[in-house]
Length: 140
Ligand SMILES: [Zn+2]
Image 1 (tube, rainbow, N blue to C red):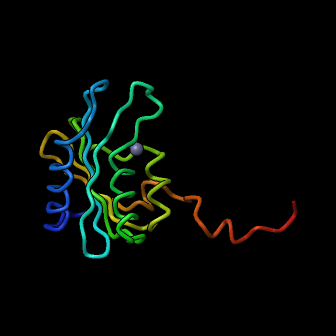
Image 2 (cartoon, rainbow, N blue to C red):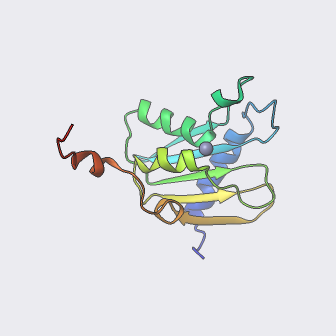
C-alpha cells in the first residue's frame, strides 16, 4: 500500500473541485481529475453525450488541458468519482496517460474518505508506448 502524502491530498482537492463541474446527466456518475505537470495544476471533468460512446473521461480532459498549456510530462494525476471505493482510471485513460509518463503517480478518491495511491506503471503494466514505434522494422 502506497502511503498518502499531503501533496496527494492537495491534488485530490483540485480533482474534487473539478468533479463539481462534471456533466453526467446519463450516468449521474461524476468524476473529476487534476494533473500536476510543470509545476501547474490542470483540471478535467467527465463530459457525457447522448451518443454514449462520445463521452470523454475527466482524466483525458485534464490531459488535454495540460498539453494545450505546453506540458507533456505529467508528475501525477488525481481522480475522484462518486463510487464508495476510490475511483480508478478506466483502461482507455490509463493508456492515454501512459503517453505522458508511464510512471506517474496516480491518486484515487471516492465519495467516502478512503484514498488510494499507486503508479500508472502498477495500474497498466507493459503499456504500449512510443518506444514500440521506434522499433519499426521497415517491413511493409
Ligand atoms: Zn477513462
